Length: 311
Image (tube, rainbow, N blue to C red; front, side):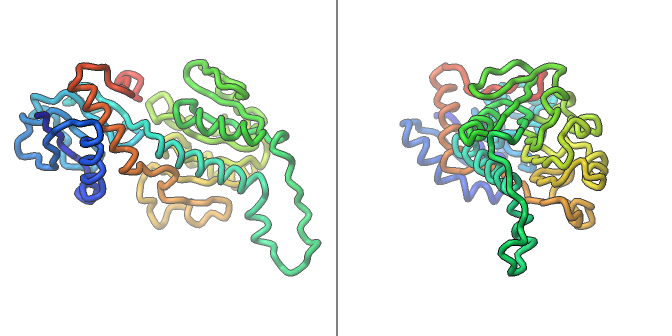
């Protein structure tokens, strides 16, 4: 009987124990599921999240797989003690949540909803902003993995002009695709840019002064990806100059965002507390258990991380 260790924060155990147990029953897999780290050599599979009880994987001599609970793996991918396969979370619930957050904020800025709310003064005719149709609005999605592709497809369905950038060429119907060294080409004239690329050494500060200068004047920046993708000083300067009209930011280099951080008080910034797409226990549990089932059946794991690429 395989042993599964839940190695995340204590509060998460209460959220995940029942969904994981139910998912194991659904596939007919008998396993020992616990959060006890005292006997590491007996662990076959580990469900991991940063900030949990495990930093050194060396004692886990029987380990077959580490399943990351989140989509991002930057908190574990560089751990030299991890010598077994690592998989990342690719979950329908997580994807749906990300699509909803991104599309909601694109429409918010596209339709000028903030401007309407700020100028409701009783004058029926005071509001003189008529947004363009979606077909005339340019949106660039930086990162065309599972999340970026889903967001792009949803925006295409709403008739936005969608461009996408990825490390390798992608073929998504309705999306003009850029890759390799063509990031700036993908950003030229963009009125909305959405950051969904993984945070790796290659993408550190990818939205810098040069990238921001490519955008249409007054463009909107949405970052539900990772805080390290943004050159914060460059973004604040672009907001102050008007090159960027607004930034809606869900992820930051330091989280929780310190109370004295300038993003909190900037009039052109919306802060959301890393909620763009929370992993839902009910759907994530099925992803975790499917990989464990595959491990027991000798089948390939899903969503393996490329340790050199960083995701």
